[in-house]
Length: 298
Image (cartoon, rainbow, N blue to C red; front, side):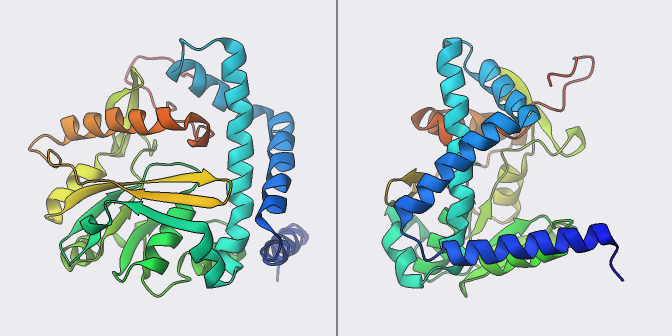
């Protein structure tokens, strides 16, 4: 039997899912306008998370004036909120609506055939839109790695949304790397999100905007174990939906040095971020883990 607290949480989650199902039918400009309002509300009320964003931007863009960084922080919260509400139509909208709003572009021939491919998908707010576009519009079976949510009702809803199209396969972190490698070698591209801080035990410290950042070296390692090419995929939110750009494969990753590969990944990620800095996931404590002897940043 659920406790009163669990019942309230269940009811709140259920109501939120129903709200998202209803939201899917609304015109995109209205959904985005609601995202602006929600983003401003989060910016005002979520003070601890706002401090995380402010700290990240100060470390990564010290050359920018304070007022410019504050404007960038506000834009970050708005894009974050808009992307979250967009999951309504991504996971519940008619498939034709997704085809109109999700534009695949770039070096799509990099995904032809059955050659093993690791897709480097940085943490821009459009991550779920990029995943939906690939799994809906391309014939290959794509895989990715999923972290279970503590709220089981929310967990089922997210999994159902990300498995919406037949070409989507999600591996839980507890399953280990072997089934991921097997799928990769079998020709199922891996949609990989390695630009986060998962703690020093799983990471190497390499520069990110000139600051040592604990970064998982999984891009290099999966590419090497899977005998795969690395193809970046960057998703940009637009007024009409999202543009999902498939870029040309990297010819110098993986190398014999996974630390050098990870540093190169961060350097190239910076170039992507600089084209749309407000759409990056600055709400994450990217510099939480510090090298031995360095004080906490947050």
